[in-house]
Length: 346
Image 1: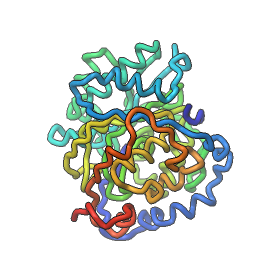
Image 2: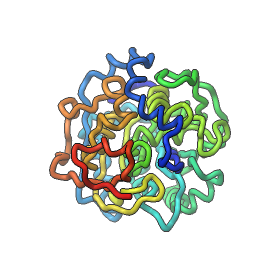
Image 3: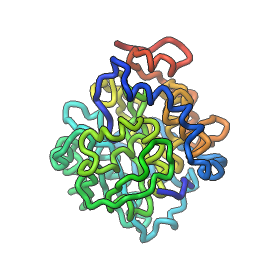
Image 4: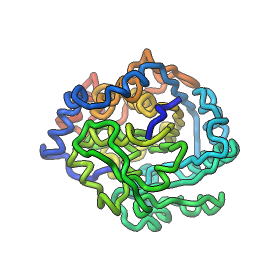
């Protein structure tokens, strides 16, 4: 099971070092000082990650997601009658770049799975770059998809908010303001798109939870988080949100100048797991990225979950035969992400 406690992405230029770059570079060091020792004991156990290949948006995604969760020992009885919040990535939707955001069909499939387990399901997101959430829903195709399945939507950018203590304490923020739907959820399901990221190298289930931070409090693109360190705030938000699991849209993905300006890459994968750190570590390996070189994963390792291959139980397909290197921007801070100096683009 996931840790029982409670994306937006930046499009800023990575070309020059600044305060954010400094914070990225010192993330691992900061981890040792983070006041999250109580999380260590909880995350020592192994976690399961399920991988399904040969997936498509016209395939049996409901069955894939359901089988994946059960393979990861997710107990449907724990959410019967409970509130489940599905959190897709709708950072800056464009019909011309469907590889940027979680596909509506994957969201519909997840809705069906959790409804089938008698959960009280809703979908919510706080797009990081788009103030007009209705526009984001229309551009992504999610509005139409939700209407088809009669599903409500929670606008996390504009909902009423409440303060929650920063349980991770890796950054200087004492608390976060979370929307009501996040605080009241019994389970938050992070549903990222499998993508590269021009600052972090990749963005996955953990980074996707930037989207639970309300724009009405933090503005757009939520630079308060960036100024406090992307790795640190990703870690802290994940430590402070309640019970959470992950379903990754790894079918049509993004490589190169992600998370917004990258190019399409088909992987045909769905990843499922009950620990977001373990899921992101597996996703990194599939992209031919070293998990411990991703700053926020380095922070989370052995605190929020495992990144060591020996502590992640693989369900479904094994990751090794499925590795297909994603192109990464040729930037100084990203060159260390790989064991070999290959698959970089300018």
